[in-house]
Length: 300
Image (cartoon, rainbow, N blue to C red; front, side):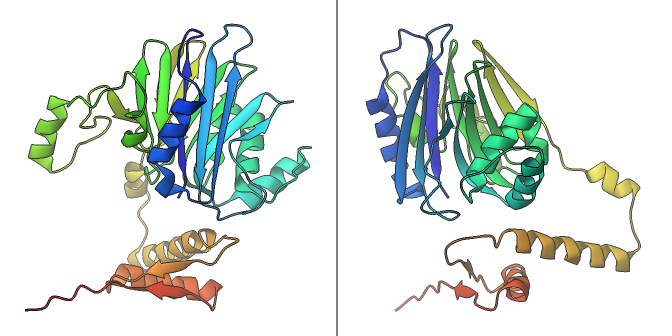
């Protein structure tokens, strides 16, 4: 996992890189390998955009520093997660004339946005939360994966927008207070969790799974780009034998996609059928799978 943070604010905002540094320090545990901070100024309005990143290096450990910028295209991205189909997308984009200098899913994400714009989310298979600054359109585009595996929290103050992978990073911003959201407390007492987009902190909300947030010229729009296809599945139910085979095929494909890595990987074993099944499928594609298990021992 990695950590991302940043904001876009009015020209008179007193916030600077040291504030972003404190935000990233709060989530340093998410990415111990590298840190990056960049800021940009909107040519037309003078608004300031800050993007920050804490990196856990998995793909292209040496060459994929973030935030990743392309000054010629007016684009910059800070990205947490993995795009599992990035090599397929890279091949497709190469045929369309785009060039790549790194073996990185981050660069593919940047070029994919350059080509497809905000529709890029429909082309991605993976777990992700990212922010892309598009200077030509004066647009900050944020997105979260379909099932919300990667977190992303927002705080809006007038036309200013702040974002981070964890709430504790947002609380490092002067003016964002740790005030309690009493409505969310009632939800927690009723459900034992806080349904999104609420959080336990007033003014801070979750970007919902399968949702994008587009800040453009002072206005913010959130849009759901994906929902679970339950109804379509029920309308096209298969015989049981076919359904089991189709499920195993899709599960095997999902496991295979997630084994793209330039560093060693492993799996945690809980002792249940789910983790055992995943490790068995991993072994189909790699003979050296490291597994780990935690045992609680009590004395007395």
